[in-house]
Amino acid sequence: MKKWGISAQRLVPPMQGGALWGWLGPIAVALFGGILRFVRLSEPRAIVFDETYYLKDAYSLLRFGVERVTLGDSKNPEADHRLMAGNLDIFKHCPNTTDCASFVAHPPLGKWMIGLGEWLFGVNPFGWRFAAAVVGTLSILILARLARRMTRSTMLGCLGGLLLSLDGLHLVLSRTALLDIFLMFWVLAGFACLVVDRDWSRQRLADWYDNSPLTPTGPPLGLRPWRIAAGLCLGAACAVKWSGVFFLVAFAVMSLLWDMGARRAVGLRNPYSGAFTKDVPSGLAALGLVPALTFVASWAGWFVTAGGYGRNWDQATSSGPLFFVVDSVRSWLKYQVQVLGYHTGLHDYHPYMSDPWTWPALFRPVSFFYPTDLPPSACGADKCSQAVLGVGTPALWYAAMLALLGLIAWYVATRDWRAGAVLLTFAAGWLPWFYYAIADQRTMYLFYMIPVVPFMVLALVLVAGLVIGKESAPPARRAVGAAVVGAFTLIVLINFWWLYPVLVAETLTQAQWWARMLTRAWVVPAPK
Image 1 (cartoon, helix red, strand yellow):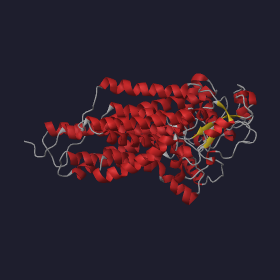
Image 2 (tube, helix red, strand yellow; image 1 turned 90 degrees about the vertical axis):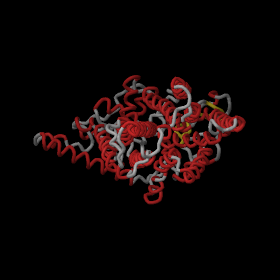
Image 3 (cartoon, one colour; image 1 turned 135 degrees about the horizontal axis):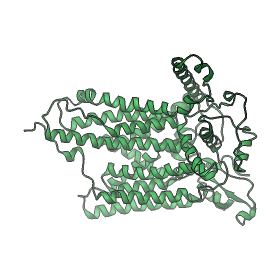
Image 4 (cartoon, helix red, strand yellow; image 1 turned 45 degrees about the vertical axis):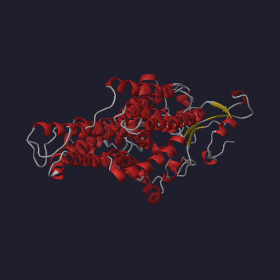
């Protein structure tokens, strides 16, 4: 006879709706978002904003395995001009390959992903933006499936995917060869894997309770493939940008707390000692060792070639295989220290830089592209504009901030794990930048928020579920709630539609462009 009462449904609530629609709905939403991201992907036919760094680094990785110095400089971007003319001879020619090694501020994985598109479609705007559009589209599918799993509702899952597809910042970064969209993708994928692992491990505990003799600490759960997958994804996030480590640490703590909660929910007498003795060791391997190995593996091109920055290849290869390994590791660690020092010392002024506490208000977006030489014939007016403005959809962002405040109250009142997970992730992706702004006065931009945008959407989805109510609620109550959520979604859609031309470089009259600027702070500096 069982000593502690628990049901599998309490540990793993059943999913509403059929499995078929659980896939068809999210896929349909992702296809809609994919159309928005792939149509006119090669426009503007120019190198926009920081694409100038990453598309060339990606091409260098394809050719040499490491990043190399290109022709020209910021005042004379000869390599950019050659690329736009179809000339791929963009690298400096050095008698010694190490003389052409380029110091790069970010790990290589995101640039390898950009390079995949260049390998498939050529070093052209479509090619270097292809991978960003793919992961942007896939992130919509992942979020829809994740929101469905967290809410047990296919409708709410599809709502989450739709809202993410309608965010302006997500759209712009999905159509631009920058690294941040890849960071967002791997963070979201890692979180989704941990949510699946949460269900998987709780199901294992429920099965143990039903079929095995009970013990005070509970069973070891064995190999947890979804937590290992989360470690791979979070290691990949760090291998795109160092800021991925904020999420790695937060998610490791979150996963341990979930394990404690599961063992407590099943009724174990010693749930915390059970979690520390049976879950922590495997957790350290999955969320410590696996991410570290993934990060190091992303530098394979640097390790196996001679032309990387700080490589010391000649010295390393001259004294035998043991010294080669030791010197390679020493040189690599020294390089990582230099990279971290570069980031903490980045103070250069930029007209579109902003402080992190202003980001949720969309105070200062980033102008990715704004040519000043458009002829009047381009739009049939005296002055024409063509812009790519890196900004979120205001209706979505402002509502998300209210939703996050609502989640704080909800979590305090109920300790709901979903509210806690979303709040923790938002804090991990936003609050660390406060330190760099205050203590280091680092140069930062609004698009650093992109990793937490899916979690802002999750906050909206969770609040939407509260507004609509449970299935057991009166039909009239649910109808009113559904109408409110539907009206909000329509407002976001209209707001996104209004901004769309200045997100994807459609040609407008300057009056039409100005009408879409929420405040003058959106125009820094003002167009001439």
